[in-house]
Image (cartoon, rainbow over all chains, first blue to last red; front, side):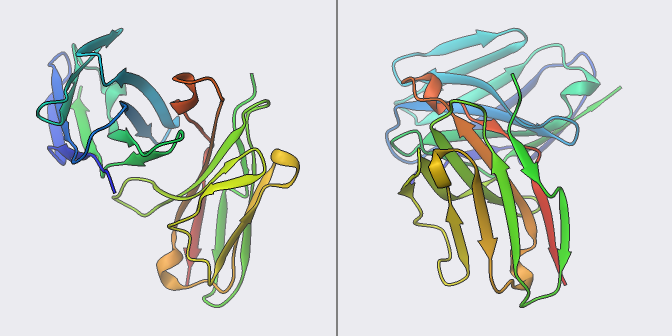
Length: 110
Length: 116
């Protein structure tokens, strides 16, 4: 089944730096999503990018999608300690079904 | 708007015992999901309901897990009998039915199950 694989598995940066996470998947998709999970707010939807879109922004988040390479990246600019969380990419498996990857663990040091 | 509610938040049982989890989705959401998330891994879909019908249960261990969604609203997930490897967080999520927004899932806080 389709599944996103995130890279790196873990990332540690200083507050104010940018964080980039990558996701690769195996088969064609209609859309790709990014979710964040931390102990305070649980699992939260961040952004959805459709297969015909190349880039999307939401606040400090920038997502790109390259369907020819079957990859996506999530950039968090000017990171804050509150961005410390696990980030998951999720690919569609048809009929609103979503398949999650194993996640990237981001730690932002104050 | 009230979020997805789950109970209990924590449960500790011995192996071979049974346990049930309850989920109340966001009002009006047609699609309901149950996920299992083992520590350090991403959520794995166990079962997906569209209203009160099952859309996908291909990864549900049907010899021990069962789920139902009566009247297309609340849902329960049951494990009987539990095994040690069932220790995980069980997440419930729901989503609406409009095309692209239907993929945006809203998650409950989860139930952390420990099987000893």
